[in-house]
Image 1 (cartoon, rainbow, N blue to C red):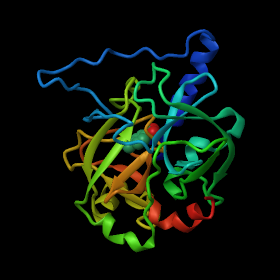
Image 2: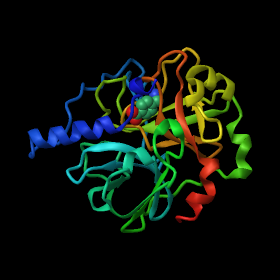
Image 3: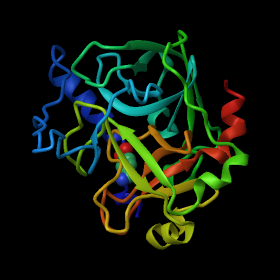
Image 4: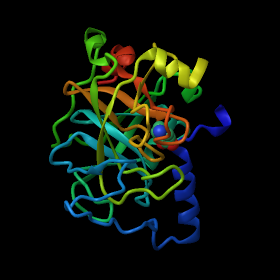
Amino acid sequence: MAATLHRLRSLLGAALAAATLSMACVSVAEAAPVPTADGEFGTQIVGGTRASTSTYPWVVYLATSSGFQYCGGTLVAPNKVVTAAHCTVGDSASAVRVVAGRDDKNSTAGTVARVTKIWIHPSYRDVTLGYDVSVLTLDRNLSQTPLPFATSADSGLYAAGTSSTILGWGTTSSGGSASRYLLRATVPLTSNSSCSSSYGSDFNATHMVCAGYAQGGTDTCQGDSGGPLVAGGKLIGITSWGEGCAAAGYPGVYSRVSTYAAQIQAQL
Ligand code: 4AZ
């Protein structure tokens, strides 16, 4: 199982390779989105549509100092971002940028903040062992509205079938190109027993929650890691891992935010 798990850091590897090849241009080649008859675009997150940071002001992305987007995150206080530990492990704070208010990665809209501190859950070792949570402290207070996060009082938000929102700038197919634009999709939370059937002992219901349709087709993917899973107006999950993207029988796996609420709160 571990050998086939897809994780976001592969995008950072690609970023570093791109930077090596071309210091002048860090943008990644991508297919131009093709509008369909209804004016929407056909290939998003996986199976999603374009969204605006005006609607989702708390969704941010993490970028290298050269501007390469490699993960997502969620603003939970004016100067605090929740992301995945696997997005920040091994990084120095001075190397990370947080971009807020920018739907289009090829624009200069919004704000680029620096990071003054990276907190990684001290028990984090690997995404399939849980604790895939990290809190960044920014060098400034952002004007974007933060998103409340789920606590132990919010177990109701994790009921199987709950409609949730995923967001990110990651790839629009497994192993494909990253999206130029912020994308969103709606996915139902799965039951714990269903996710255990998919992933066996790698799924831990204390630390994780799964979301996706049984038939697949809609999911987070590479580069979406660290970004939000939202239900009931709260951050309930952090994009963490999965077997490929949008495959039938393999939902996306998210860190269960309510489990870590006290430790997140202690960083704010
Ligand atoms: C990733 O590599 C990643 N389909 C994120 C989410 C999923 C798979 C991979 C879930 O960032």
